[in-house]
Length: 155
Image (cartoon, rainbow, N blue to C red; front, side, top):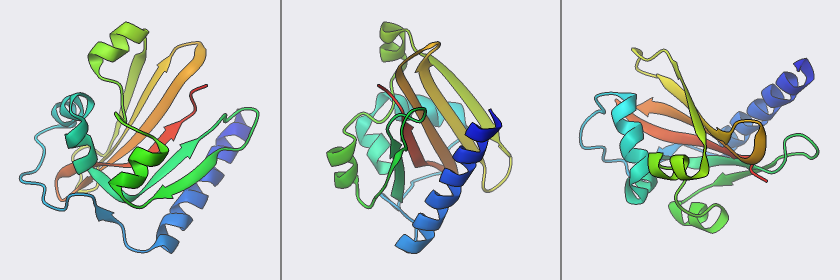
């Protein structure tokens, strides 16, 4: 378990370094009309609306994929929404209706929710089965929630 935590920590460091090397981080749609009232409200809309998903991305978006147990993850920095459609597709996250159909559970962790740089992790998966496992990292940007990392370890 400690080894896995250390490896994940190392991957995060690599990703953050890669983002800083890629240049300035910006939003896919810099005009967020008004700050989000809550993460729960934002997430519900983000899960249901593909166009809204692509308007709330931090660019470059860090995409990790592969099998995190038997092989190394592939890490990509996706620079535009078109890159995301090419390498990942759409939607980026399962809606409540899709989760029910696929028997997926969703776990949400909020970090510093009252701060200007709040963060949230969302995990969607099939419990003990490994066929679907995705994790998303969100952060606030001027009061608006944006997706900054996407990990897809589905098999």
